[in-house]
Length: 140
Length: 140
Length: 140
Length: 140
Image 1: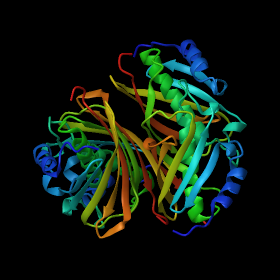
Image 2: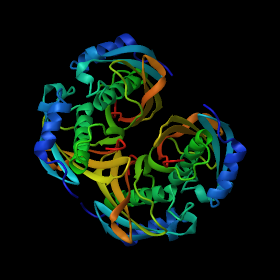
Image 3: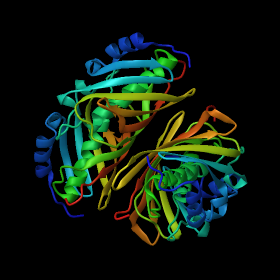
């Protein structure tokens, strides 16, 4: 799959379109159909007991899927999430969470991604899995 | 369905367990199996174009489902989300988002909730829908 | 919501497009955005213990959502399911299963439905819930 | 992951518990946490246009996930599906559909599986993806 945007271009997009969360994420690898990102889970991402909150993990898979699509499609700012199904399997500790996302389908109007979240200190343990559908704007 | 915790008791729980987000939410009605809450969407909840972000809406349905379960079950702090499927249907503007959640099943180990998000200025338009499964800890 | 096809027209469609299963289903009510159908669960729909199988319930919500869309949109034979999330909450006995489905959004390219399955002999008990997305063909 | 049941033992289970569909499925590989099965899609599995129906593909992922759990856990006949989220991405032709399923988590009360369906004549094209949660009976 051809790469239309690399990690540097995606980082610029992240800074422009997600100013509230830009410091929370790092790109690890951009290799369509795969994009791997890290969430730097700090106090604001935690729940009682010190585990990373569901909305924070949702935010990670959502942004990672978005950049999976941009990496393959180019800068289409208006792609929007239409569906996400997410399973939380283990409680991750604060720190770095790794998300590896795959673009499974890039259609004319829909894109489908699937990915997993791992705790970086226990890379063999899956913390969560998610599948997401994005609607692609016409005439992009 | 009997009410084990009312809005005042749930608000106390919210303040204790969700200190990072307590100011973002208001209880509108607690009437098991239904709980209705509002997200006060401010700048930190927005995406480019001024619409409320996906993670913010996920946070709303997640917290509303949690309190749906607590209202019916009593103070079980350790219930955890195991699955959420959410469909985003319209882009909501900044402001107040209303979530009405229903507890469909309260089993021995699992609880299932289903709810919808509405823009408060257009109550007839559904912004999103979600279903969530929570795992109930044993010996609660 | 205007009705483009009534129960008689939908029944004709069912007989033409679903010849393998036409005898399994009955229309109970067609009133957009709602369609209510019954699955007549017989031996071929059962699992060990005499409960209705998951694929049979999936088939019920899938066909009911399809006819929800046709009732509102008219005869668009090529709408296809793109996503379904289904929660099974209780084991239904053999017999009649009732599905009440609602069309939540009918967009240009996507339609979203949500519905519940009830055992007809215990109408207050929800057996399953499901949400489905259909892709609408262009130029219909 | 240790194998508690091999393909021969699973085939015996399939014949006993799924008599209505036993001829529709073949085991390709049993290697926990993975199980690969084939659906032999015949006329009864088709929709207009000759593509395999959604309920048939749901049946494939559901049975494959069930045997994924049995392969790792041993003969626990009463595990039941509690949730499935499935995305249909391409329309598969009649013939053999291959499902490769992975057991992601085997907990005390819940098991989570994730898998993909491929058309056997186009193995690089994903037809569908699905994630499933099963409830594990206590004291198994």
